[in-house]
Length: 157
Image 1 (cartoon, helix red, strand yellow):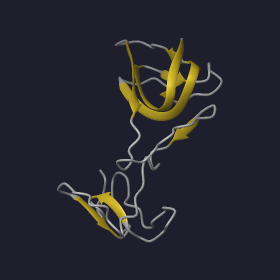
Image 2 (image 1 turned 90 degrees about the vertical axis):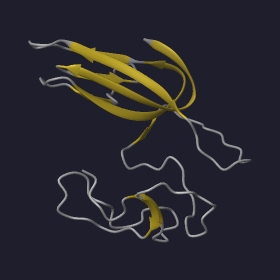
Image 3 (image 1 turned 135 degrees about the vertical axis):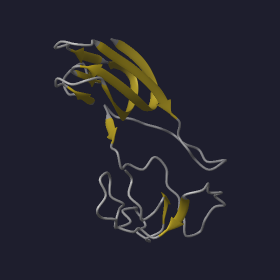
């Protein structure tokens, strides 16, 4: 399927019972998917797209229930009021699980109002979690060890 995308970041969610996978380059590479036998699951991935894009979804069923799903949404660019923002993409630029969609120097706090469980603080490593571990270092460009986080120093199970 060929789709003309306005330049920007898009989040794709695909799912299936059994195998499924999604390509945004005509099937040359696979953006996301789980091409094995399993019950219905979904995976989400984001990518920068611009212009004509060849989407390919592959799916197979190996007995039992048969289900496949596909959805996508535009990811808005977040910026300070009055800032000019241009999103420019090459062929594709993947945004991984730990990528930064926006950044701010939290040591000068630009007036953020934080909801419960969110805080600005130092990176704190966690251990013994059954899910994702908290980061032990600040990997931002400033490396000032100030970060905005949800439950800093806790497990993300």
